[in-house]
Amino acid sequence: VQNHPKVLTKFFEKTDLSTLSPVWQQLEIESLIHNGDYRKAQRKLDKLIAKDPKAELYFQAAKLANKRNPKNISDTALNYTRAYQIGTSEQKYQAALSLALLYASNKEYDQAIQWAQKIDSSDNITDRETLLASLASEQKNWPVALQHAKAALDSQNSSKNPVFTRQEISALYAYILTQSLPPEQALAQINQQLAQIDKQKSSPTYAIERSSLIYQRGLLYADKLRQPEKAIADFRTYLTHNPDSAQGQNALGYTMLTMPNPKVDEAFELIRAAYEQEPEEPAINDSLGWAYFLKGDAETALPYLQYAFKMQGDAEVSAHLGEVLWKLGKHEDAKAIWNEGLKQEGDIGLLKETMRRFNIPVPSRKKHPSAKTK
Image (cartoon, rainbow, N blue to C red; front, side, top):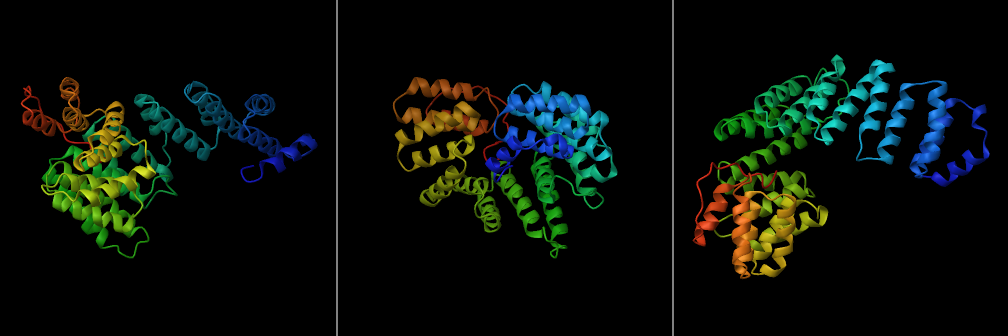
């Protein structure tokens, strides 16, 4: 279906599928979905379900519903629910996992949590706990997130073929640590986890898992501990194992720009490489715009920062955009951007410092941690 759709299309047009096993009819529907013929696929699928409803047909119906109307998840969710109701234990797991991810993507966290909790097989504990940790993290419920992340780590050896990799779970755990604990405690926990991993150098996932934790430690050094030299060292280590990582390139490049004597040219090349991979990522646009500004090109910097502010709009981005606007003589626009940034999360300290440099009065407000490179 994926590699030679025309061949199968001709085959289905010339063949009486009723004489073949039902799987061929399902394959025809898959081909129709792949070719975008959603109405015909729906008609044939409805007939199969009416004749013999099976979980695998409802999975197919869910896929079709998502293709036809990805913004309205109700039909997709209904078909996954039906698959869950009549499926085998493995199919129930697949349906519950799909529903949890579907609702999470729509930010319907209560529903997502309910379905994640339905993953009750001992073979799938790691996926359940990772999902629950991620959902709690999305809601900034850090104590609950940390509890589930620990459980996900502890269950990895007993789970069967988890969807989430050790690297993903370790990175999630480290990120939650940085958000739920004071920076020094989080640093100690990450270092402890790194020491445990170093005892298992023979593991095939050793380098990947270790570099993921190094990246999170770099973020901690950069954003909360304000130790950019150590952050830069960690990001460089991360990139030795993940040389094409856009997030790593951006994190290293932007942190270099925050140094007292920034290596702007090297930072610019790193950030530009990240931008070529992920041109729609707001944090990378902010970094690239700020790099252009530090290179003395405020005009080129402006559209990147405007995009970043439109998409992300945190305090750090507003500090950068306002300074560029001020440089271009748009002082009132700069003031408006700065005042809007004060209402957002992010590095409020940087924003206030920027406003004071231009003699703009700022109200007192509790500082939020930066989310620049996350």
